[in-house]
Every structure is written in C-alpha cells, then in structure tokens.
Image (cartoon, rainbow, N blue to C red):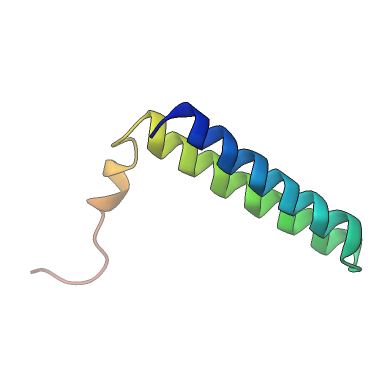
Length: 67
C-alpha cells in the first residue's frame, strides 16, 4: 500500500474524528472511549501494514475441543 494512500486514510479518519468530537453532542466519557477505540484500531491497522504477520501467534490459538 503506497504511503500516500496511508496518509490520506489517516487524514480522513482524523477529520471524521474531529467532526464527531466537535459537532456531535454526547457525554465527554463516551467521546473519550470512541477516541481510544479509533486510535487502537488505527494502530493495529498500521502494524498489519508495516509488520505483516505480527499477529500470527494470535491466529494459532484455538478455543474448544480437539479437531
């Protein structure tokens, strides 16, 4: 993925987050939760782009019985 595309996505998401924080009336704790969730998802997305396979250890974990 080209770096320009990554920067555009980050700018659009930042702008949308700013719009929500500025113009959507909601309680400050809810805004804080939304901000934290969006930032965590962006960091995970960027890690997946720049370090593919860093999460492979998580995909090998199985819940349940034997197969």
